[in-house]
Length: 393
Image 1 (cartoon, rainbow, N blue to C red):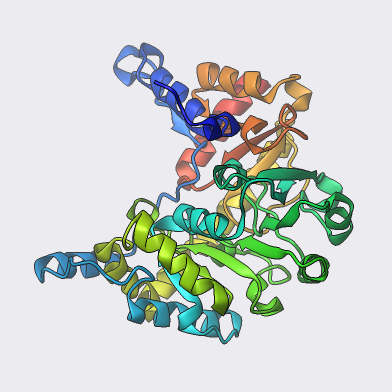
Image 2 (cartoon, helix red, strand yellow):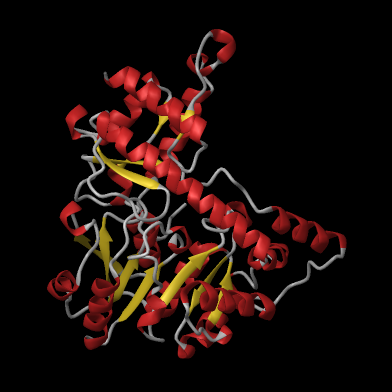
């Protein structure tokens, strides 16, 4: 069967390839407690161990019992869009018109809609290196080309306005950023982000910012939304991370007013509407008891970060920039070998700890860095660190 040429521009998602390898090892005798093995510890996937908050689960159950499962508007339920707008006001002090908010089938659908609406064949979109691989693949799926801007630890693994100006070309349509970032957990400082937006705006481009980890900021210097920089900024967000609804597949976009109609038209045709049950459940995310629970979880994730990052340093896996958000540590493993891919597979086999090599996140430092997710429980993290210590001592 002849495949579409666009697939040549989509690389494998190595995070998932590694996850399959880790699962295979986990099913072997080496990880069978009955055979004297030790269970695999999965620190490779970015999924909090908390799950949906109790009120969210109860809201979903009510929705099913009452039969409220019909299609909604393609842009999402009006009451959910209004709840999101109120959250921006209470959390970030921002007045966001609910009409600018489009609820989507996860942040992935949000990114796909934005890229399809804005980019086409021959366009170029500037993205950081390292960055989440699917973001640049959404650009490629729209026919455009992601142009990577390498950023090292001295720049907090984030680009600046000077890099944007240096990489801007005749075909450049805009930039796609992430703050906080996956895989580094680092954010772009407000002043630096404002300078980038100004540089893009001056060139007639568009700025898209992936803010799905914004709710999980641990440093007041960085916990600010790019939406404060103007109505022409496109923000992508999600119920998966701060709100703990990973498998519910619900996210949203905040768009310039002129872009809402075109994105709605795409959504109507691509998936009709987001999950009705997930939308009804998500209304409960904004209840005071739910917000209190999310803040408790955010404090717990910060506590885990404060355990993991210094411990990795003592193991020769230095984290050069303390993550100020999300739940990832971007660790340098070059003291233990020339390839993070080989190192991670070795730790899977010997320590039975699943980590993610840097290959997915861009070529600049793919062989030097690995990503560890500290979204697992404190007990699992302590056990994983002990096993790594055992193998690396």
